[in-house]
Image (tube, rainbow, N blue to C red; front, top):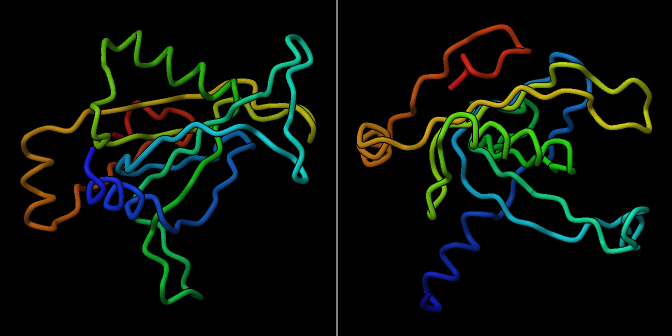
Length: 163
């Protein structure tokens, strides 16, 4: 990767508001901009796995959404979701079960919904619903023409109908 490509790649990940998905029905839908892996930390300290003693990792999923904060004129709809292990497993299972793979340049449409929320404030979501549609030639044409891909509506707990 050239230096220019590296800068362009980093520029795509800038900004974005964080979204917390925890309660049954919480949903986010958008175009997949990036997924990066990082070491999980809390109050500046690395979080270690109780089982292995190794640092835990989380994914930061960046989506370009239709969401806008009416009080923020600079809100571009970019949202970030921190994906702990349970969400990572749900995404991997969806890819496996649907026979899909993420393209190396990301892209496509992703929906993440909480099917069964956290039983307590300190626990993780119990069940996720994931949907992903890989980019197509039509998506590339829409991007080239700078026209958004329409967002279908569906029950919040069934992400498969959202992409």
